[in-house]
Image (cartoon, rainbow, N blue to C red; front, side, top):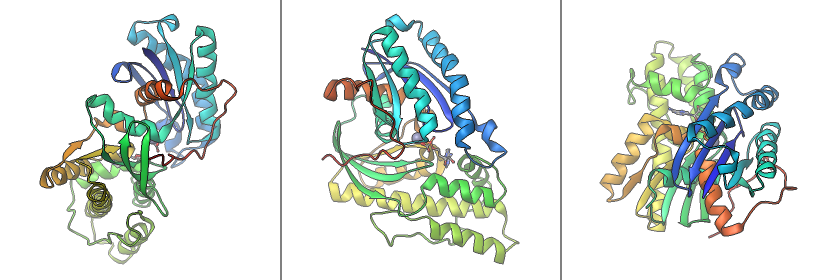
Length: 331
Ligand code: KG4
Ligand code: ZN
């Protein structure tokens, strides 16, 4: 079964063609980063307008790269939440229109569930139970995947998402937007041990990053002599330590033999390396999808749609978008 997926929940307009939920035939991502950079973050109204302009050409590119036209597609899926309301509406409306034209089912996909499914695109044989960390610009959660469609959310952030902390600290350090990749790059020139920033374990199993952000601001004001590279590397190390410690605790408690990463922050080189290290040291397997599947993309939407179409059937065409959609605990 060949599914066309569309993703427009934030500032990436993406479309992909995926076969049987596992084989990526084409995947096109058009980033709006340049449009939002001068505002220091995503401007929702600009994002919606850009999605309207880009969604048609991006879908055409994805179909073209796959060498199919709409008549070769068996279902059309779009992310219907969580995300920015206006941005989500563009992808969902486009998907419904295409599904109507092609006379195939429409499938609305949960963005967080899609970040989980990115791992299966790389490793089709991945066997649950899995301990998964999803860390993005809007969310940070640890999920035990008991089986396809059966999740237990064991920890979430109490304040900022991990990606939001990267973006805010990068802005404070004058590194621009998006902050995660900028800190990741600069951190390679600094020492992760230069400054002992706090690792909040207080809310275990939940996450907290606001104290760390305040500590970075306080340190820089008090020690202007610290290099920005050392601050970036030490901040990044503190985030990675907290993320990995709570992922491993959850895996221990659930007796999960595999650690999995998803979401934009999973593109972080230090986090990827630490998860591989910790998995090896604790006799587990690590599944770290390529960075392009960690950040927002439509291949993960099409893959998830295949599984959900099989379990739940098509989504009604009169269903809407849900900007606050959560990942339900279903296990
Ligand atoms: O999953 P994603 O592409 O979009 C959302 O669903 O939010 O995640 C975007 C977030 C941003 O906060 C960005 O700064 C962060 O992921 N990010 C990174 C890296 N690449 C993207 N954070 C740390 N290191 C990176 N290399
Ligand atoms: Zn995302």
